[in-house]
Image (cartoon, rainbow, N blue to C red):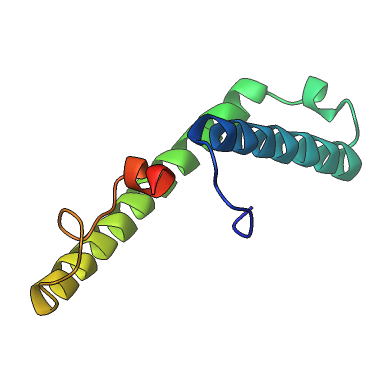
Length: 99
């Protein structure tokens, strides 16, 4: 998708939504192949979901840390390069799609 030119924000969001659907479908098929198509009927899916929520919370923490590191890196870069355009070095989504 990175190679495609982004023309319209709504169209781009729809493409991302379809990408998500495709990923879910592929992971469902992979799980069915690996564990059997009805395996989810024989496991405690609530317990599995609880474990996944804990994993997701950890991923959120890791992503937060990585985003803060990125933010700090950008801040340091801006301090060293005062002519960088955009508010604090960021370009708004509107700027990306409008020109």
